[in-house]
Image (cartoon, rainbow, N blue to C red; front, side):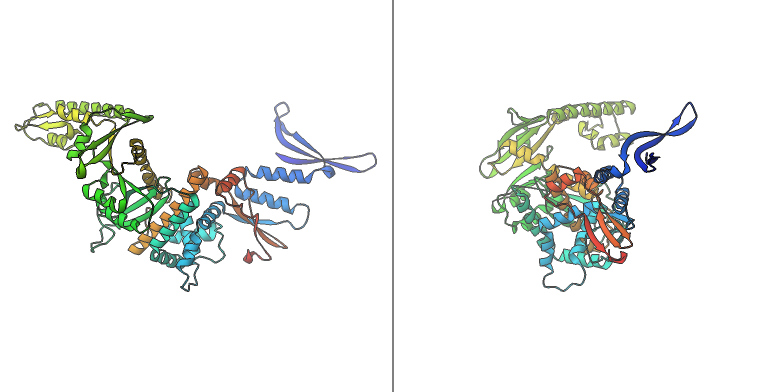
Amino acid sequence: MYIRKISRRNADGSVVSYLQLAHNVRDPQKGYTKAEVIYNFGRQEELDLAAIKRLVKSLCRFLSPEDALEATAALAGSGGDGRLRFIGSRAMGGAYLLRKLWERIGIEGVFSRAIANREFTSPVEWAVFAMVANRALAPDSKLGMVEWVDKDVALGNDAPIALQHLYRAMDVLLENDESVQKEVFFSTATLLNLEVDLLFFDTTSTYFERDEEDEEEGALLRYGKSKDKRDDLPQIVIGLAVTKEGIPVRCWVLPGNTADASTVEMVQKDLAGWKMSRCVWVMDRGMAGEENRRILQRAGGHYILGEKLRDRQEANQAALSTPGRYKKIKENMEVKEIVVGDGERRRRFVLVLNPEEAKKDLATREKNLGKIRAALEAMGDPQMRGHKKAACALLSHKTHGRYLRESENGKITIDMGKVRAEERLDGKYLLSTSDDSLSPEDVALGYKQLLQVERAFRTLKTTLELRPVHHRKEDRIRSHVLLCWLALHLIRVAELETGETWDTIRATMDRIHLGEFFGKDGGVLQRTELTQDQQNLLKKLKIPPPPLFRKIAATPENL
């Protein structure tokens, strides 16, 4: 489509021009193209220029940010010699949103206080923010991040950021590790009016592409049980505590051979000084154990712990075998409260049943039993006398082995007693709690929210690309994880207040670009027009729209 101007001469000799919106179509009869008028704007001198400008701006919403800015520049310069030339543009929307959240939470003030008595010539606080914003918007190495700040994003900072500024800022961040996390969390809790009554804790691991672990006592990079299924590589363990809303409370960086159960005392001790109100710890099965239960009850604390269904502890087995009726609390969730023992040996359990999962467990078990029978038949000797290689593999199989029994004479059979024992566990999981004020429904639903930690770990490893870690020194590794924690914090606040995923927020805001224009009378930095979706996101986050013009200068160097 294009704008076509046609003119005609009146009888008095005057010329009248008309503007039309037209496009070319091919005439199938005559075999050539001709103009077809779509819309008549009317006489040129009678045009409503303001209405046309509004139309152009409206159409710009469907262009790329660069094309929209170029069209806006042409519109602004039309009708005179002061036409602005479009130089280029950089994304600014995502960085603007993160910066305003950063300031709303008060993180800027946290760093100002941290370095108040120190003389820095480098932009420490802006360097930390730049690294956090990079994690949230376009994760890269620190070297790649410098180029990103310089070429790809309008961060909003005046002073340039160099690589040495980043490393200096990482050192300052690590020096103030605990105070930064504490102040940022409590500021967010106050801002969002969070009720911190449940704290969820879990661990994950991330590996390093290295041949050997660090063998020094207390070193971070050690071999351990990898949750990424990479036991062949050295790793670190990361602990994370979050609220029921998914807001990160604090993170820990631990040696790669740290066992889950050994982290409980450290976590409880570190957060004890934060003086939170009544708090119930929610942890997974890996944290269960008598000593950990005792630790979590220090200073009046309480716990909700996942218990191992196949644990041979007397109390757990008694809880599973206690009869009683289930109470339905929501779709596919039924609960049964069980109290085992008296006095100091008293334990309170909640057994949770998911009927749909029970059906799936039954179908899976029948499928496995069918494979076992086929394997026994294929080996040709149902008695299985003698330890053949195939028999050993079957007995040691992680799933199939639990259904088999080997007699003294070498006979291998399916143990129906074990099958019936597994049937008792279909669709169930067992929880224990020390808090009698919580109803069985509260216990079950509270534990279900432990998924918030798993979601946080997924965000760390995917959206924020915690891995690969490009650092070798332990201090740099710890600081890198803390930067990811800060980015996760901003992301979760944005998601909680808008009700949108970070992927949606980032894609919407990144379409706001800051364009650079220059003409003979000077230059200007101007953003793209805001769409309704962008305005709605900013409104929900209580963030004012970015100014239309950021800077006006006489020379390109001063923009």
